[in-house]
Amino acid sequence: MARAAEKVIITCAVTGAIHTPSMSPYLPLTPQQIAEQAIQAAEAGASILHLHARDPHDGRPSADPELFAQFLPAIKAATDAVINITSGGSTKMTLAERLAPPLRFKPEMASLNMGSMNFSIHPAAQKIKAWQHDWEQAYVEGTEDIIFRNTFRDIRHILKDLGEGCGTRFEFECYDVGHLYNLAHFVDAGLVKPPFFIQTIFGILGGIGPDPQNVTFMRETANRLFGKDSYHWSVLGAGRHQMGLLTGAALQGANVRVGLEDSLYLGRGQLAKSNAEQVRKIRHLLEELGYEIATPADARRMLALKGGDAVAF
Image 1 (cartoon, rainbow, N blue to C red):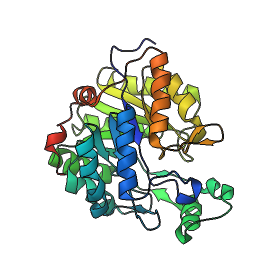
Image 2: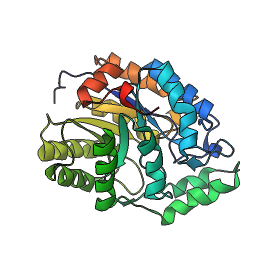
Image 3: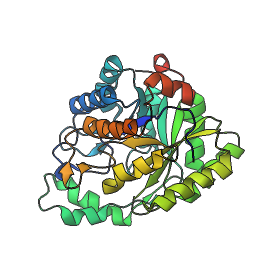
Image 4: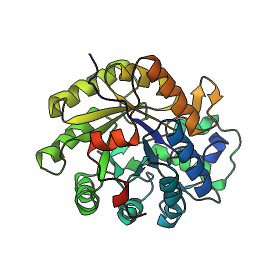
């Protein structure tokens, strides 16, 4: 399939709520570390920065808006990147907790998970020999018995209050084919309007697997549901599947997402020392294939964003 004549958007998910401090010494945890790594990722070529916060004392995921307030202005002042604040938070947060940061800061973009699901990282606990903090082991092992809630009512609430209320557009996170149909339901209801940004996610335990055939299937399903000209498609490959899956997806016309939220590694057995390392690697691979990387201005135009001057930070 030939690419559309568009540049490739690189999204960088800087820290997330999946990995814990014991898994990598390079995971940014404090507001200063998150700001520094986000700025470096933007300088390396990421046009969208997907952001979570962490408790700076022990690295646990946090939805405290005051922590976001410590790094959002610094990132905005140092880069022109599109700032995308999570509305997913972590699987253990309430919807009100998850929405507190984006509702306060009214970003250009926010993530939006398109369905409830089992979302588990519990097998990772077997690989950790020593935990740095008391919360980590129970957090990781506990995902075996957690349902990540994103009901139709929850999604409608986010689309109305954050989307219509704040002018925020979304990174629609689709972990399985049913999530594309959930998105189509809201398109049909008039609550989602093109151009929209679909982030298809592969390799999370509980979601669709990281097989190349599944990438093609999700793309073809999205084309059937929405028409290929109404949305921009991006691919996230979790863990060791990151770079290979993204490179193959780019050949089918995908934008890409990297970052330490999605994978802690740069290559086989090699921990990434920063988010910027992953951005530089995928940028090199894409440019070697002849693709041009989207600037933040390109991303804003492609996704019809409101602009960095219209946020509340």
